[in-house]
Length: 369
Length: 205
Image (cartoon, rainbow over all chains, first blue to last red; front, side):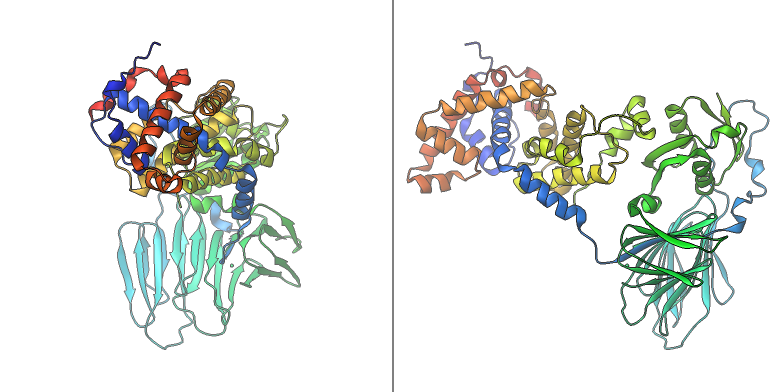
């Protein structure tokens, strides 16, 4: 037998102890390591019978279908001024150099918080304490804002406004504990503290809400022409375009627009046509619509013009189709949101080599190869 | 909750081919049902995880999390014939991450375990199956008492002292029987005896 493992090099006492208690003693000989690898492999192979596929599948389906207790909704509304280019941004372009440019510019505009008293605060740099009075205590860091109710009993109804420009995302925690994620080019109007019979906020653009449950004080979101009343939730409101969509992740939601109303259950979406005023609902997979708040870029079979419209907001760029028939070419993209737009453009070019992007300052020309 | 990041395989280390495959959803092609795929590979993947984490429940969790990830991305991941090797790599990485996060295992130790994963599982599916059969055949050739003790320890995870108590024998007898079983099985399963020598540099840490 040609064994190159010298059994005499093996301290079996040590090895047996390691197999028993799981500790890996240092200073093992090569022969010991080999013996250990063999024993480990045997154990793994012999374990197969302990992992029943039937039980595994049952546990998997339970975990998959589990609904979390909170309500989660995504809301999207139209923003009229969203296509206006950041003025004065052209200084950034290196016009003198004929070298191909790369789309890696940082967004120009800052996240702004306008307090009900009239003061405006620029967010996004450091951790800062913005306000600490009987109405509310407000703290901010680079991408998150937190409100905590103050000790005062005053019934304040004045509203604060948070503006998130193109190229940025921001999240905030309202005084009642509700978490809100705001996508690029979006605005949230909300009270510093919630008093009265209901909690009401107004959103423009796109926001994801994870509403803290409070049966005595329903949470109401106004977005464009519709109103969402949370009946116990997470949901997403998207009102960037001609259609306004509300997508429910968990809980139950009542969407009202004019005379019409629909009740949403998880993985359902309400679509309001802003022109006709018609409101309908359809089944969807909610997580596809909420990917942005987790830092993912997600498009499923989406036409290139929709993708570039979204990238323009997320990265604060402007797209021009030099070849208009590229607009309808469809793509599926699912990646972590890269820091630079260029990385996304590269991915698209890789997947479809007939598409070419030419960067000029903050403008991207879409061309055929 | 342990963190799984199969994205790592799909998007970072992946070559362009893989990125393209993800980005551009294939229109045609026979897709195997998710449940079928799950049932076909679950047990195997659990053993892959177990080889690293050495804990049955943790192994199940790692594999379940991996499939949950796949479920959420099922519109994008077209499951093809090479799903198994992709899944094995993802589960292997997730298992190592689990060890790192659990804080119970030293970093050097994790490094050694990572090296050991070169031995198991094999890329070749047929060879992999053959080795399972060879191992069980060799186990069946062990003397009856030795076989029982060995399985109580290595398959069922009982402690030496519990085996000794259950069979009313001494701990030293248990250890000796297991040692003899390990030596025999390693010789019978030729590939284990032929393990290449790259482990040498690890023996110095």
